[in-house]
Amino acid sequence: MSAELHSTCEGHTLVLAIHNPEHRNALSPQMYAAGVEALDAAESNPDVRAVIITGEGGIFCAGGNLHRLLAQRQQPPAATAQSVDLLHNWIEAIRTFPKPVIAAVEGAAIGAGLSLALACDLIVAARNAVFVMAYSNIALSPDGGGSWSLAHALPRQLAGELLLLGERIGAERLHALGVVNRLAESGLALADALLLAEQLGQRAPNALASTKELLGEARGNTLSQHLAAEREHLVRNLHHPNGGIGIQAFLNKQTPRYE
Image (cartoon, rainbow, N blue to C red; front, side):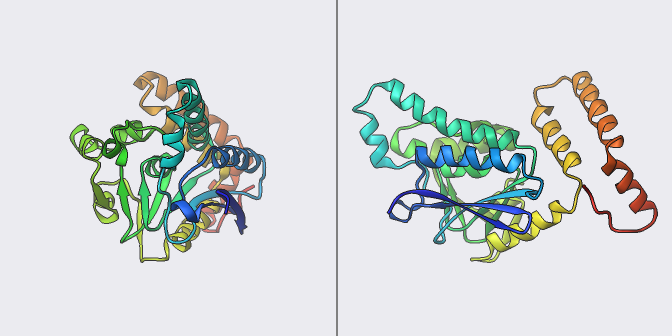
C-alpha cells in the first residue's frame, strides 16, 4: 500500500490526511510534493477558508521513514539534502499560506511529524496524544523547522529538553506550555479541529491573511518596521469591502457575511 496524502473537503475546510499505515504514517517525498500542490490550489480557491492536516488510522505521523533514511546513507549527501529540501518546501508553504492551517493530532507526532504539526498555525490534540522530538534518539538532528518552532515557542531550556533528550511529552503538558491550542477527547481531534476551522471561516479572509503575515514577520522586524507593516495592513483591510461589512455588522449587532 503506497504512502499518500488524501485530500477531502468538509464545507469550507480542506482536510489533508497522511495515509501510510504500513509505516505509522511516516512521511515521503511524494507527500511533500502533494502537500505543496494542495496548498497552491487551495490558496486560489475562495471556497477554502482553512486547512487541516491530520493522520489516518489514529496516528498523526511517525516522521521520516527510517528504512528510507538508512538507504540514503548509500547515496551522495546531495541526494539527502534534496529530499530534506522537499520537506522544507512543504513547511514553508504552510507557514506562508494566507489561510489558517490547523494540525489535528491523534496518537503520536514523532520527529518530522512533530515539526509538521508545529508548522501549523494552531494545534488541536487528543488528550492522550504524545509528541516526541526523536532525532537525538537515532543520532540525528532536527529538520522540518522543528528546532526553529520550539525555540520560538518555548524558553531555551524547555526547547532543549525536548530536542536534546528526545523524550515523550504529553498533549496536556504541551497545552499547559501554550504549544497545543485545544485538547480533545480521544478520537475527536479532527472533529474539534473542523469546528475550529468553521469558526475561523466566519472571519474575513483578508484580515486573517494579514494577521498570519504579521505574526510570521514579527520576530524578524524591529518595532519601527513592524509598526509600519501594521499600518500598511490596517489601511488595506479598512478599505477592503470586508472592513465595511465587519464594522457595520458590529454597529448593527448583526452577524457579518464576509466576501
